[in-house]
Amino acid sequence: MRYLPEPPAPGQPRVGILLINLGTPDAPTPAALKRYLAEFLSDPRVVELPRWLWKPILHGIILNTRPAKSAAKYAAVWAPEGSPLLAHTARQAKLLRGLLGERGVNVEVAVAMRYGNPSLAAAVEALKAKGCDRILALPLYPQYSGATTGSAFDGLFQALKEIRNVPEIRTLRHYPDHPGYIAALAASVRDHWADNGRGDLLLLSFHGMPKTAIDAGDPYREECLITARALAAALNLEEKDYRVSFQSRFGRAAWLQPYTAATLEELGKAGVQRLDVLCPGFAADCLETLEEIALEGKAAFLAAGGKEYRYIPALNDRPDWIAALADLASDHLCGWLPQR
Image (cartoon, rainbow, N blue to C red; front, side, top):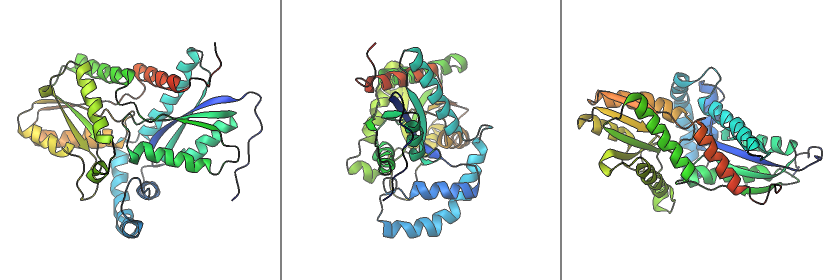
């Protein structure tokens, strides 16, 4: 095996933070979606079927039908600066580095996508080129799942296998009830209520996952409920004031329930007039929030009889969220930074 050439030796070793998010196609086109989906859906953490069974389905059916449909959805939310997920994550990285600098913590911050670009390998190489010999991997997934955080760590360690002089690595596993994260979520809801009035119900929609993964021991569902309960407490909500559901089901197998799509229809038919919807598991707005929830979800709720549907944006570059990220990073950088 040949290893990547090492960058010139830096004068002073530095600490780097690697912000990791799920990923995005390079463009809202069928060709770009085919490349992206091929990488994403080939990950055994994402689809846990035997490879001999899954590969013919993926390459024979899904990659010949789904890219065009997905490209149309991405085109509906694509921003002038490109992918919303990448744009928001890049701003988070810039603001995080700036805030840590204001606090006297001088570090480098790089963005990596588990699938697509910038890749984990490219981001690690960029940090090494800036002299980073210690790297904190900070996935932007508050709730741990093997399919998200676990896969991000798989990709990171796979990238390290190509490096001769491997940097010291720390990983941040999860933060479903971190005080700063919960406070930022609560503040975003209060800000929405202050501007728009309070709805009849708050729906907390988390990304879904196959039920088989939960049955096999994945802690994701419980961590989503931890977040929901902590947020409800911060907002002084009673059980009747909010609901939890799971979105983005893929395939015919049973996933975590209740499903968001079915819940929206149920609530509309049940006479809920004004619905507020928040996706606490998404640190940045992306296809699943901007298209599936803000557009498709709204249409489904109104068609079922609801009157007013308000999507509350993800935390994105809110100052309180950047402060929470800075607190998380600082906690995990103990011992790596010079004593002041």
